[in-house]
Image (cartoon, rainbow, N blue to C red; front, side, top):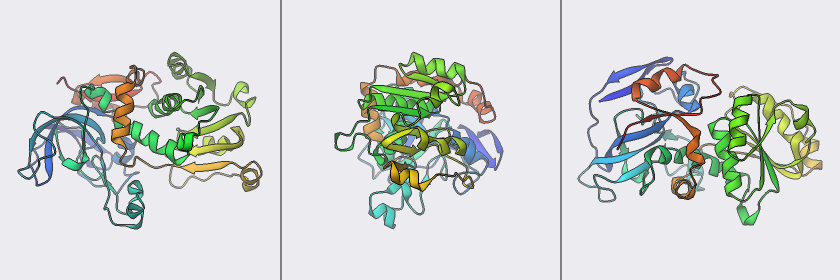
Length: 336
């Protein structure tokens, strides 16, 4: 089978691999859609996870069950499914608390195990979720959307009926826009998105979001003006500024992936005096079904975040490309 393969850190290419042998408790999945995430690029360069090379990347994917092990009854050939990539140990202190995304030895398809940028993928059946008639390209958005939902849950958005009056998300890339749209879906009526890219801000506006230029006077004039502020850029300097834009009694969420050695300066007195809630969020936590339910109700707006649907070989160059504001979510896609 054809696959994108990381042979070593920084070394990505196309490969012809043997079909995976089906193991007990597993299903062979024919991949129909797999999304490229910036995490995949970090994995390639050894900046995320344990650097398990060689590796087939891809942790955002959906497809059809091709075959199952003899002991499998939960799914059958022909089933249309999406993948939960996280593989927790199930018994460490975090797992015992239900925080499987914080597992001490967390593994994941596309990070430590072969993932979705291949014609076929071997997946444990308890990581497969039915997608009904949802398009595969849309179902492949379930993983990033589940990450967003985990972040909103960590920040208390929607918990106990709490809905911020307004919100600001830094970053008009796919994950930032997915968060902004999720906030609207949870009843936040006024959602703004900040970015330095005019084309991306124009696209955000077309989705019904308020565009604001990062570093602009318009944004500076809104200091302490947002009940909820989230960073989806992973830029430490941006994170440093979100407290100043958060309203008294509001919530700030660190959602983007900053470099592990990055540091910010925040005045603890300000957090204390203005009763700011500061939250963090990592990955998803067994909430693919909730993400799929939201995608099934969406009017197609979230699906607009997929800008490229390409054959496998044409996805490979995007592991090296960056900076094109017209590029949103890139997917490996094949017809059913």
